[in-house]
Amino acid sequence: MHFFPVELFDHFRISLCRHDEKIVPWQVELPSQVNAKASFLKSIKPNSKEYKIFRDDKSWLPLQDSTETTIMSHNLMAMILPPYKIYPNTGEFVTDPITDKLIPYKPDDPGLDEIQQTWFFKVLVDVCQSPVAKKIVNQNRDTMDTRKVWYELCTHCQNSMSSKMPSQELLRYAHTAQLVNSGHRGKNQSWITNFAETIRQHQALQTDENKLSDQMCVDVLNNSMRGTTHIKGVLDTYYTARKAAGIPDPFNITFEEYVERLIQAAQPHHSTLGQSRNRSGQSANFHSILGGESDEEEDDSDEEEDP
Image 1 (cartoon, rainbow, N blue to C red):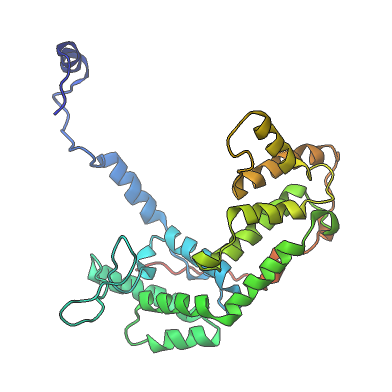
Image 2 (cartoon, rainbow, N blue to C red; image 1 turned 90 degrees about the vertical axis):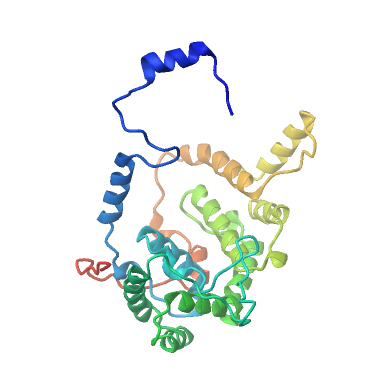
């Protein structure tokens, strides 16, 4: 219980309190907020053409990121939730103590869930074109359980040798690539951000015990800056400044912070060039390593809306 001074209560009673307004319970959205949210959700029209084609396991990681983002934008995240009930703390599936079987996921609105699953299952039928993905989809045609399809797809691709190959190629690229020898004719910032994305994708393909440490990521990126005069000393300057300031553990820097410092250091150099470089000769970036999608753009005028 909280106590307030009499003067504060009198001020509230006389000048702030409105007896003619409806009392809204604490932490409950106001009608205006509810209407705005409903209007926004109503304006979203799920379009199956926004989902990328899944042709092989090598392209799984960018496709997974793209699909999950698209599903979130369509407000259909429930379609790829785990197919069984899970423990919130551990993420493990819950087993029925009597039947010793996994407890299936139960939607809040079964009717709506069935309609949404039918629509999204049609999306999966269209986009899953790799042999194994087609097999997984066909095995679940009777139930049209999109949650189970997505779970089996994730399990297969995370353990597939084909999906592990890009991880090795990304790591090899990260160890050997150097900005000064890359032939990159665009902005230095774009090369740095592409390199950071290479590391992110490699980390996403690894189990927790196999991921590179933050310091290893910093060392790999620092090695790629060798020979680039205007930014090769960024890390040493940072270490020296922290050591001179008497900061404990002066050599501690996160990978994200180092990337940001490199981008800032590269900006003045690019500004002095005086003109934009021709991007037509820009070297291939890390996306070519993954065998990026080459989907043909289709007419977006044909939209499929969520029933």
